Image (cartoon, rainbow, N blue to C red; front, top):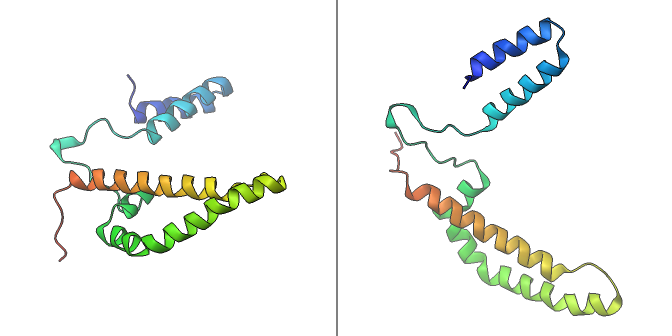
Length: 128
């Protein structure tokens, strides 16, 4: 299997030769390799979880604490949205605020769980 450097060199050669079809195929392969996560990390190091990803942020203890503190308000908003669904349906309005709220809260919960999984494997860090 060709590595990224070999594919990039072949892409440059194909482009210089005017082989647009070959260049497109090679460019697709280069994009695929660049976007795919590494199969392993050299020297056995564990990859650090990204704290900048949405999942990483949702899994942070401070974020989880804030969500817990806001939980009564989030629940009240969700209840209000769910109570509007039958009214909207009776009026023939296709919008379903309760369904949207439930999906968003479920997505946040999945992100929080994924962030916690990422952090369980980390060994922590020291702030200098």
